[in-house]
Image 1 (cartoon, rainbow, N blue to C red):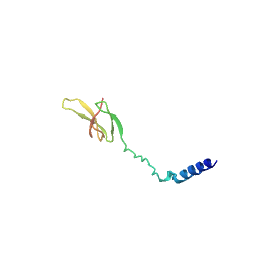
Image 2 (cartoon, one colour; image 1 turned 120 degrees about the vertical axis):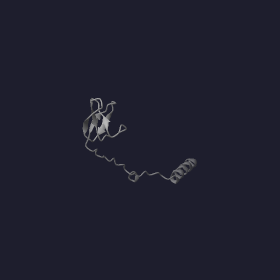
Image 3 (tube, rainbow, N blue to C red; image 1 turned 30 degrees about the vertical axis):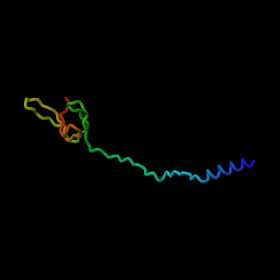
Image 4 (cartoon, helix red, strand yellow; image 1 turned 90 degrees about the vertical axis):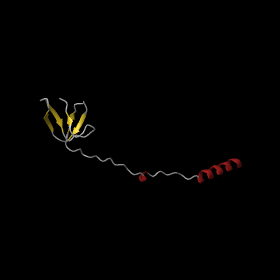
Length: 87
């Protein structure tokens, strides 16, 4: 019986000396997602088959051989500011 009481006192003393970890939820900064409105524009299909976002007007330009081609201006992406459009 004495052994049982001593074991209970020893285990309670061990658990009392271990600090309890308290997690504070308010200390975590909240990440806010900011939505930025795109300028007015439109999606066009480039001659290479990729969709490109353009904010400028689409124009028709004549080539040296007499054929006309459609071009979109003010485009974003790897293809540059002026993109030749698909027919």
